Amino acid sequence: MTGNISGTIEFMMDKEIEGDHIVNVTGKGLFFRYVVIGDGEEVSNTPVYPWYGYSFTQTLYLQSDIDTDNAMIQRVGYQYAGTNPSLELTIEIWMTHTDLTSITSTIPMTGFTKVYDGPYNLVAGEEFAWVEITPFLYNNVDNLIIAVFEKKNQDITLLVTNFILPS
Image (cartoon, rainbow, N blue to C red):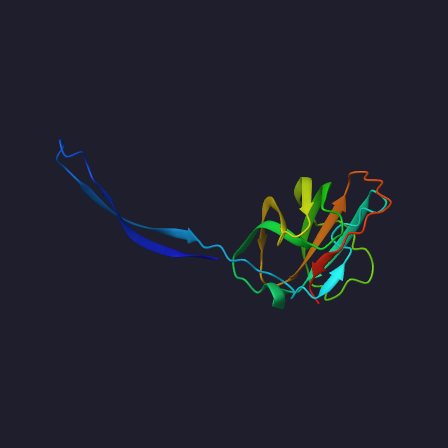
């Protein structure tokens, strides 16, 4: 969210120097707003399911759930509810606007923007596991699809991974 901000800056000079200065300024400001989607009641194996080492998910977020004008998405987080105390994964995150209202099969990646490629560390009991992404300007008109590729070959056979998602 952005908006105009006005204010005054007063430069106080050293007491040995005359000439304090007052400058009036006006500009655009950036206000941060967290958007949490869901109530934490649904448990799912998305955005990653590293049971076999690699996974891919696409999640649709409705405009009515996001509903934020001029939203620059700068980080993404999920709440980890797995049984392992921690996981170190390597993921890619991709985003796109869409007019779809449901996902019934894999959506072709044409038009998606890669916003993250790197480590994703999960610790049981933390509120959210966040990653800072390349900013993505959400238009607040369309729905949003977030695709997550889990790339690191975990080969964990006794792993149970759950994430709290929208219900």
